Length: 379
Image 1: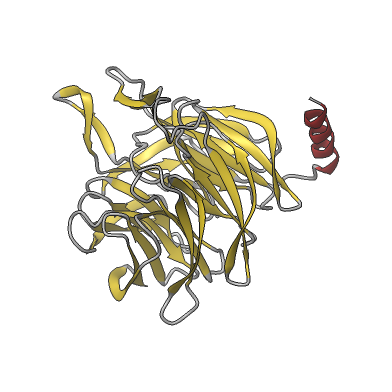
Image 2 (image 1 turned 90 degrees about the vertical axis):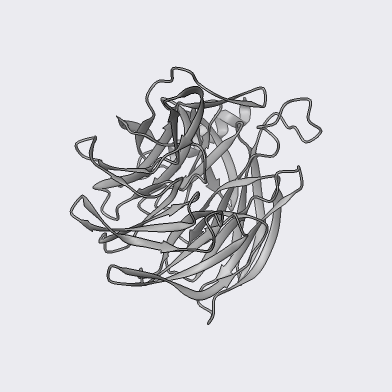
């Protein structure tokens, strides 16, 4: 208790004027995990999208919208436009209309006006629509379609999307999962967990093509993020889900051709991954057996968030803290000092502070209407 009080005093003393920043959390009400057993809710409440003001401390909810989403796939299925006027949220699964106890592939992508707090357009991407990205000019969006081996391309005018084709990547089961624009937006990186491959896309206006550069990091690269300057990418390799300790890889995108330059062990099943705006940190959300039954030899009662540093082209572990169960995405504040981590089972978001390169639990929790499944910010 003494430590909590001391931290509260420190936060109060160090708080300065806030600038606006939005974090957008997509929350799945269809699928749950009870004592390590996953199931589909027979009559679920609608999925929701929670809009959070991350420019104040503690962060606070400023709005909520109903929109389809899914915990299936990496927690990178939310993208926020650079000016924070709208967000894109994909849905990889939906309830099977013929069987209340299962889900089937979905392909919907919702456009959400973050000022009016409403869905203004719904378009179709591909089967298992997962990771989403918006380019720096806010003129192009990409969606990784895990269950058909493609990336969908959309042009953007204002808040209106129009389909501009698809890029085929390997076989249908190659599993495109996360997609991220690089630097000025003339390239993009795609993770492929189905065949453990990373692919660089070339972007010329609204024309997107797969380059000849496909390379490797670890087993089943899943979540990914790119530094603001486009120099590095960090990739979460989820492995085979057999209880083994899995890894995060650092990719040097400035090299010709880009290549993996470092890999570090973080624990079983790293799902969420986010690089801080200042490029110093990588936050990795690790299941650590928390989604398994208590009878499993790999079970842990909680997951963890691991804070890595990027220094001299290498990854170094700085700190770790306990999080909830079946935890998903992460998001940093603009100043890189506040970190949000989503807990799917608890239906909340934990708030951490970073002080002297160490994670500190603020003991603040943001409740959301559903299992917190994916999160995004403008950076």
